[in-house]
Picture 1 (cartoon, rainbow, N blue to C red):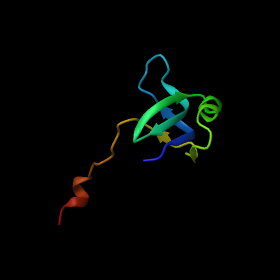
Picture 2 (cartoon, rainbow, N blue to C red):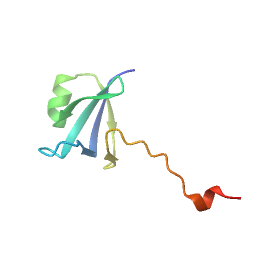
Picture 3 (spheres, rainbow, N blue to C red):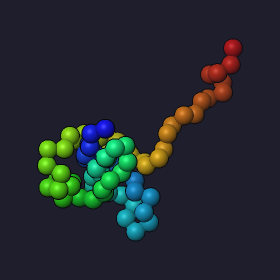
Picture 4 (cartoon, one colour):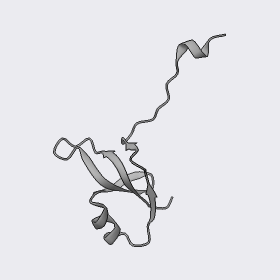
Length: 73
């Protein structure tokens, strides 16, 4: 799986000392590095960049819920 740099989002880190980050590098499906976009771009030239358009990123959250009223006959 290729590396990908997520930018321009609201990235939740789950770290109380630094609850949000400017950018995150995803490598092999895992958060590899979190920090400032300029720093991550400099350390990872040529990496694919995904603009999140201010969407929220939460590590480990998989949204798989249902609304019971819509599941009945």
